[in-house]
Length: 309
Length: 269
Image (cartoon, rainbow over the protein chains, first blue to last red):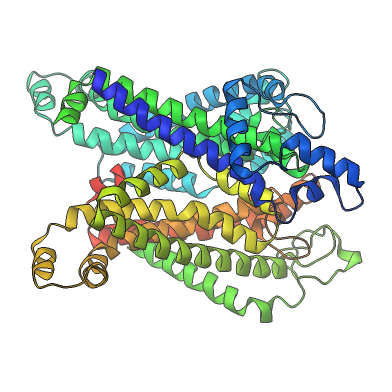
């Protein structure tokens, strides 16, 4: 177990370092001189020099990277070029909204995906299976920047049931959560189906059936718990769909989270904020995945034993 | 079976109108003030947008955008990803270690986040969209090619070729790549659907093609502002996007069944 823990943590550290370097390099991809792009063509020489120094762009690139990493360790993500506030406090302000939205979307996704996947698996090859998987394929094919406006059109404008956008109470969360949740549900239901199908071939399912347990009982108490482990790991990976999709969904609904902040910062050419947002989202994703990986190894001895050989 | 046939036909129509787009969509920039925001009617089934431009013609022009971006990005990604993945797996050792770490690092950026950041930083424009999506796109192919090569490189025919003194380059090109082309083709099909959505997504965010050029994503973005009075501006490009993506995904599913690739392997990747 300890061995698994150490190797996972070490490889994660390498990945995180790589991500930091890549995010650091982003600012050097700005075509031309980033200072010109940020200040405009008519800026005074002194202003340019000041900004260049503030961003550390006059230093050799190696030093810049070291300073960047050093500052990250201190929790210093730089300063917004626009509002002049520290980026870290901007992020902290926005994190709760995104976490809230992500959790509710996850719930929505599970509520759709599990029934759909179970129905499909139990009726493999039949009309129910095809319908459920058709719905799932439809879900993958409808991007959230289309589903969002359509839902707004339907429920906010035509029916007037829910607010169009913004964050104001529970009602405002319904549409963004459905938009974000369905994308995940589409992928998740396929996973539930295939994992469940694998498990249903196992001996203990036959035993349970032979005991005369009801069909529903076998699925819920014998098949599903065993299918849960791989599903949870895959769910960790699919968190990427959620976090990536959040950027667009938050923009559609003007949801005041990290995703909206990212896009706003891109529009304002506020590069330190863009870098910090991308860094935060990716590192969250990496950490969650390592966490599920380790928990998985801890719960399922087959994983850690397999790792040793 | 029939539904898959329809999917293929839709894709053929999409590619054809994209190629013919420049000749068909002659009025995609023509502004007619008297028909601003007019909905669909008998004479023009798709109506007009907020500047009085024909939605039909803009749809055709947008089709070309998605087609160009999708095929360019996939061509770049497949080529680069496959070469890197097979070489890395075949050579092993330090090269493989570095490539695996590189793949891991790129996979740490969820969804199209990195593409959004890149497109945002490089500045808007279709060429930057292609660059941003290719930078993200190669990773999946590299991983798949690597995994497939690892399982193939100890096969008898590869060992035999090596024993005969065949050069590494020839072994990779003649003995490995043909065998891994089926799963790569399937991945590429799903990749096209993903790139179509990603391009539309970037354009929706304003990071893709710039006005007055049309993209389905930017049409949805512009249309969303007039949803109250002209919902067709969102629904029509949205439906077009959905139908094409759905068809490509259906084709991918069909190819997967037809080529009989082990589904388990695909899903673990």
